[in-house]
Every structure is written in C-alpha cells, then in structure tokens.
Amino acid sequence: MADWRPDVLGDEFEQLTLELGEDDEGAVVATLVRALPGEQPWWDLRRWGSALRRRPLHDVDVLYVHGWSDYFFQKRLARFWTARGARFFALDLRKYGRSLREGQTPGYITDLATYDEDIAAALDAMGRGAEGASSTRRLVLLGHSTGGLTLSLWASRHPDTADAVILNSPWLEFQVASARPLIAPVAELQARWAPREVAPQVDLGFYTRAQQEVADPDDPVETNPLWRPAQTMAVHAGWFHAILTGHATVAHGLTIDAPVCVLLSSRSATPTRWSEDLTRADSVLVVDDIARAALKLGASVTVERIDGALHDVFLSRHEAREEAYRRLDRWVRGWSAVG
Image (cartoon, rainbow, N blue to C red; front, side, top):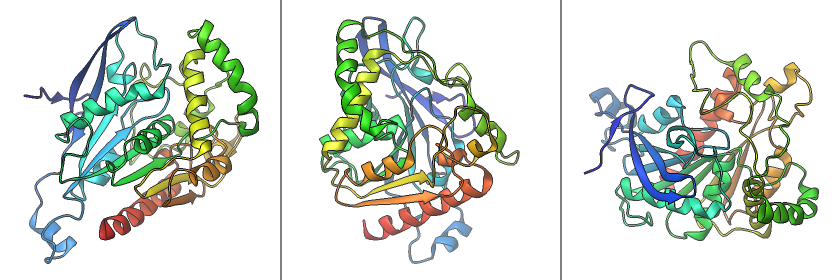
C-alpha cells in the first residue's frame, strides 16, 4: 500500500517517495505530491448545473512537472484543478526539491529520456499503470519551462496516453536559436569527455527579484531557497547537452496526438541589469522563438500570449496572473466539453 504522508506544503497536500534504484551518486528517488478534490457541497452542484451533478473535471488526473532549478510549491495552481474536480499530482524529479539527497548533483542528468522512469513511477502510483493509459480517467500533462520540454518529448514518444498537454513557458528552443547548431557539437564533446564540467554562472538573480517585486500579499507564495535558489543551480556539460538534444528533437517536429495549450508572456526582456521592465516580461526565454517552436509539437496547438507575464505566468503580477488563469480556464473548459 502506498505510504502517502503529509507534505511540506501542509493543508490538503500529501507526498509519496518513489524509489528509482541507484546511480553513481547513490540511491535515486522521485517524489509525487498530490491534492485531491474535496467533497462536493450542495452549492457546488448548483454552480456547475443540476444536470451535471459533478464537477466538470471529475474524471481527470493532472500530472505537473517543474522546471530547471525548481520544484513544486504552487498551491493555487493545484487548487485551480481540484476546485473543478480533478485529482492533482506534481512530480519533483530525481535530484530536485523533495527528491534531492545529500551528495547528489542537483538536477543533473545526461538524457531527458531518463525521466521516463520518474514519470512511469508517478503514473503507476496514480493508479494508471506505468505507461499511463490503463485508466478510464483522462490524463492532463502540465509542465513548466524544462518540465514543458520533458513532457512534450515524453508525450510524443508515448502516443494515446495523454488527453491534453498544457505548457507554461516551455523551454522548447535555445535562447539564441540560430546558434544552437553551432554550439551543439561542442556541447556533445564536453558532455562526452567532461560531463560534470560546470559552465560560468550568468544568472544575476533578477528573475527571482522580479517575482518578489510582483508578489501579491493576498496570494502569498513561499519557497525553500535550498530547493529553488535565487540564482540558478550549476549548469553541467552533460545536462546542457541533454537540453540541446531535446531542442533539436523539437525543431525536427514532434507528433503529440493530444491538443496542446502553450501559455507565454507577450514579450521577453534581457536581464543584463535590473529594471522595472523585468517585472512585466519573460527574462528567461525568447518567447517569440518559443511560440514558433510550439507549432512543431503536434497537429493541434493553441498559443496564448499574456501581456505583462513573467517566465512562470502563474507567478506574474496580479493582473497578468489572473489573465493567465482566465485563459487556462477557457481552454480547459473548451477541451473538456469536446474531450
């Protein structure tokens, strides 16, 4: 029987450790966090309509995967789904957040396909079987940044599994797209001969500062700085090569057979020095390049551009954040009605 225990987020959140064997740094685990919909009160039945008698997403499971130098902490995002009847699950991948163990290199991996093991273990713990398809419940994949890249590649390799894919500023292309083909061969050599070589730190902490500047005191978000440092975790050659390989795969075109929704800021800003402009733009990715790359994910792709949004659209200033949730709600309602 699964050993679910209270999570660090408290309230309705629980966590489950997923054992994944060992590597050269010792025991490897992933951590699955869940929030389940509460009992539906009588006024909720009236809200959704007496003919339905159930919340519209009562048959939906959501699996969220975080980005680079990150972990799951977004309570409000989980409650968006559980309020509509869905079961919400979030996966802290191996060597991130709750899954990081002493002596491990944070976030280190040399092939994004290795996360297939983490995802399979999560789906199995969700009662869907390791391949995720042995369930009558619909599956929504929800990924942010690098998690969006990981889930896009996974969904393309696992057809007939996901019913919808929702991506929050997915890292689908290198920040200088034209330079990727030139950089890739050098990155491959570095990954082969010195996979743990560390690149110079270029993050000045401005993205974290921007989130703090726009934080809403009425909607507080607390994070663990050991799991989500103000400046990004060290970038190793082996990991960087894995990312570029993923970008190249997207550039050649994926075949995701489920409808895809991509949420992005309307514009980017270069974080070379601090300015108020960084609180109203994506300072991590070149969003126009991401929008173009998104069209190569599959046959049905919706791109939602949100004015004033940060890299994580759900951590933006109040107006942009509310707009992101409105866009998400509109897309989900449309998908659910025809799905």
